[in-house]
Length: 455
Image 1 (cartoon, helix red, strand yellow):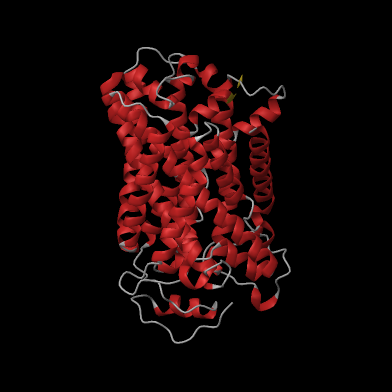
Image 2: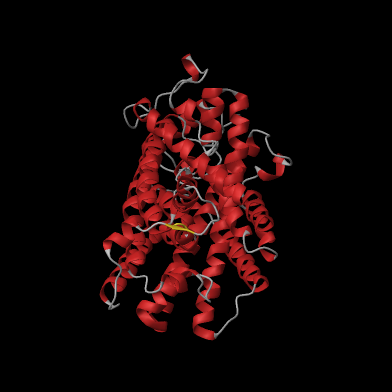
């Protein structure tokens, strides 16, 4: 890591800035995000109204209700264990590089570069997946209200407009990002309550608990139920991606050693509970399973809302979902751009001298923001020619977000010794969750591999 030169004066607690210098970096980003804002960015990136809704149709054919509900519960537990370990290390190393920097310090340069490239790929894939999903839902909304035909070309134009919006919003600085993420938390929680409440009260018919929790559906072409269930876990694995955003924004968070660590864990368990309620509410309200899967809107949750609430109610709730997805995509661009900045700060990207530049006015890595949305756009271009390309983009996100998580580093069993191994001010040790963490990592790897091979 580069040894810093003269420090830059910023409004921040002296101990946080001093800690960053001890880690080898000169402070250049503005600490304008509080503890709630840090939690909010990870919660917004996880975004149950984005991940659960966009891959709900995928889950209907890859295990069905049983895998979606129990898979969510199981994956959520594993991810919480991973989050506890990650929070422990984030407390010790609160830098924008997050996983990449942790792996470098605790596992060596090779582990750092390996982790950094995969994590960056996952973050860029997440932008593409989130914003393209928002474009799909926007097309479904316009179809319901105005008879708009969401062709691949029109969906791509909507997607590019959303990317442009998120780039511009991120250029205004981290304070605006923090405000939007704080609003996003309450929007998501109120949205889930509104959707589930409406689906419980309004429809005359609901599915039985035995259907919701035990019905297994296999439309994959594979005969092994275990294999199909592994594929179906993609819904949960994709949604539970991005909780490391709190770590990526740690250099812009006050009292980051505690706030960033706490933000990771809180974002996971709140999403875990709210996501289960959302999935259960949608599944209980399914009127016609086959018609929902093959809906003309192209978005099965939209068909559930349409069948249960009518056109007016479905349109209103779809708008709630779309706004939540826009919040999510905006937060993901912030996290990805910080990873680009941190990786470039250590010369790891081609053209690093450009991507690590920070605006003197907003203290935002402007070039990194544009690179993030530009690469995300390229990743989604195959969707113009293949309906399955979107699934591949989500798989890229899962592989990149979960595989590089430095389990050996968080378990303290890497080659790092002595002064290279730091101790944070939050929690009581990562080793207690090592076993569960490893299981969760293996589960995500299995799911991603199955999905990729199938497509």
